[in-house]
Length: 432
Image (cartoon, one colour):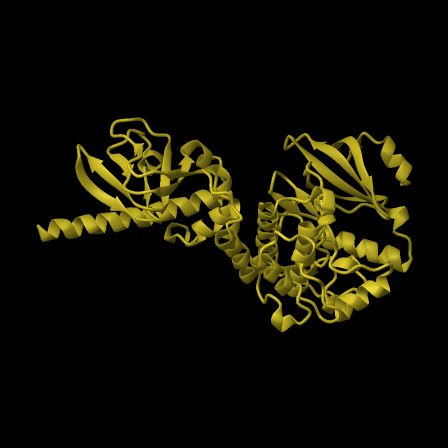
């Protein structure tokens, strides 16, 4: 089917075309509406007449099949989900999550740079998404600003996994895939690749978001590839003086030419980004807590030990975080409650008619009976902050709309806490 015919179509399969979003060498992307799931989707269409029996056509077909094979697999809050894939005789297409915020490309201009703390937060979320993909044996291999979509102020969605390498598949590494400016030295030299090539590429993206410049300037690809393999890039702070040394060091380590001196694991990269927030005070110290700090706080609490990264991001999405002064009352005896809380820092006391029942430490929850009880949501005690404290507040209604896996993790965590409290109560009774 010629490409012009697609423009005359009102539907691609069951998906109603709303408008054309863009065009590449072998494909077109349309904004469509999915009437069955009542949502807008992006549909990438590849036409058979563009996949001619040339080497370029063969590579394009292979990239399409690679991306299509990931449908329903990369389910993560910071990865653009692939919902469906259809391979046809005249037209094949991939149905993806529609992200209306555009790409990070517009923030790579020196006149439109993001604040440093927002850049660190965005890169942190990229590391968590790519760590998740790596856990499934997927290396993206084409990380660049054009493949990172904005879903909110600092929320992102990584897209375009057509160039991905998958450890579970018998796959020959195709050379020449990727954008030269973001390629790792190993990719340029056509060495065997793993997740560390994505770490390098994300380091380049971070460099560009911080400075508005690529680390290496070149007039042609040959010069670019020579510099990537043989020349040291100037530190980001040489372009932007307010960039702190900790951030310079993160970029330098992510972009190190030698694998044994580059970040070995995504977790290490993530940890350094989180530390940069705390030690350099990049995050604004207000009632609102930065997403990176939320994630790191939850990962350090025993309550969330069994939660996956994706489930923690879901908790972040459905929760509100509050910094409370000493003496602040959180719950009152006899009131109706539609939420429960998890203490992240500080200390809270539970009292009944001024009698102290319990002192809670970080990682403990309270008010959970409003969720667990099917008959009554009435509070049975007062809860107040003993000192400056921070809590995660989650509405019962919002948890009810979370994924089944996330709700299951909460149920198990609640049960473990209830069992521990009953054991302590029995010990106290035995001691009387």
